[in-house]
Every structure is written in C-alpha cells, then in structure tokens.
Image: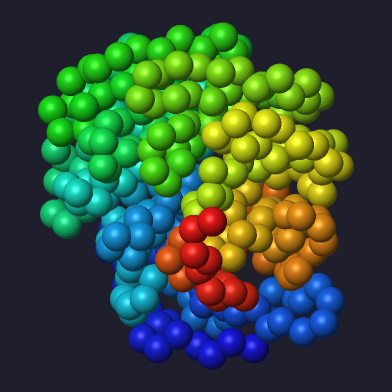
Length: 340
C-alpha cells in the first residue's frame, strides 16, 4: 500500500454547517488487477458534489454542490472553504482560471426542473463575486483557455435543442463569437494546448478547431450516449459508448474502434498522467490500459453518480464516493509521461 500523505488528518467544523469528505487512499500494484483502497482520512460534506474540477496551478480541488462551491487544498489539513453560489440541484458546472484566480460557475442545464441561465464568476481567494451574468440560454458546460484568454460556454435552450457555443474574452467577458452545433451537445472539453475542443451529447460528437472556430462532426454512428476524455500529453481523445470505444487522433481526425469496456457517464472518464484510462463502472473505479483494454486496478469506492478528475502533474485521482458526499484521493501507479 502507498504511504499516507503528510499533513492530511481528520478535521471538522466546516463553515456554514457544511461538512465535506476528503479521503486519502492508495493503489498497491501486484501481478494482475489490483484492488483500489480508500484511506482513513475524511472531511465531510452534508450535500452531494455535482461536479468536480481540479486546478493544477494552485493544487486546488473545486466541487460544485447544490448552491455552493467547495474549495479544497487536498494537500493540507482543515475544512474546505465554501462559497455560496446559485446552482441547480444537479450541481452546475465549474471551470477555473489560474491567471486571475477565479472560478466560473454555471447553473447547469438542469433538465429535471426549470433551467436557470445564471453565470457567476468568483474570486477564489476572497470568495467575492466578480460578476454575475444572466445568459440567453442555460449553460450545459463551460471551459477556459488561460493562455488564449478565452472562455467557451456550451448552451442550449432545452434538453433536445441543438446546442451553441458562446466564445468570450476571459478578461473583458465580451462576446467574441457564436458557434452553432447541429446536435444537443451537453459536454465540452478542451485539449491541454487549447487548440481543439471535443463536444459530445447523446450519441453524437464533434471537434471544434478553436483558432478558426470550425466544426468537424465525428461520424461515430454510436448507438448510445458518448462520453469523452482527452490525453493531456498527446493529441488523443477517447470516446466511449455502451458498446464501442473510439480512439480519435485529434490532428488527423482518424478514428479507431474497439469493443467498449464500460459505459461511464458525464464526468466519469479521465486519462491518467501515465496514459491509463480511469473510469467509473459503478460501483467500481477502474484503471485500464487503453491499448489492451485490460484492467490494471479496480475498487468498489463509488456509485453510479461518481465523478473522477486527475492531477496531470502527479497522476493523483480525485473520486467522489458513494452518495457524492465524499472525495477519495488516490495515488497514481505511474509517473507523469513526457509528451510524445
């Protein structure tokens, strides 16, 4: 088993009555698939976390719950900071801007109730609102490119409607462009260099070239919902449906297919620092070799709503536990790779 991380300990007394859960665990690697074990160190949260995000520049974990943004330094003891922000009951969506130390929080595209069109920008140090904006349509997802100083807001008026992408200047928040999509997309992920965005929704997927905002539809012919994750060190995207795994070369747009090992949902697929695929196959978290599609490690530490994010520098995994009111912090099996 891996060693416990120094400085983490059980804590309590979270502000505003919130109690969040943060657990440090480890993966012991022996021959064959290895059991992932959560550790004993926990902070508690009295509400589920709807979406996770990680800000590598400041080693900060962000969790969006119902009406709150939780800000956690997973290397330090002590309770999370909680910033009250309007989100729907599904938790909303969040992206962070390391250049300004702000978090952009969208109410989310809540298809189970009345959608809200609120976008909030908050200072992560002070917790103050920098700006609150009412948009023309609910935000299903958003992403920030800190180098190009652009924000991409994926929106749609209702669940079955074709989506659009609003491009904003991340500093002035002025609108730069509007991109129409021909399908009801609900997820947008940027590559590490910001040159490409992969957009998915239902069985459809597309690539957006951010320099010219050209849209290239991927002809996957999937028979179920598709989720995507991007390799942080190579121009490779992994898209999974219930029956097919698609490996996409983001430069040539070539697509290779293979039988799908699982059918994760939104926020349930990630690429590790060593190139492994990490996915939620409830109730298990599975680490898999993307080439052989063999499980490297697995553990029953989450549920069907589990979320997973990765620190690209260290390979550390952050995984919500059963019920979404805990986060397991799990060490990587490998070191970060050099770019290929």
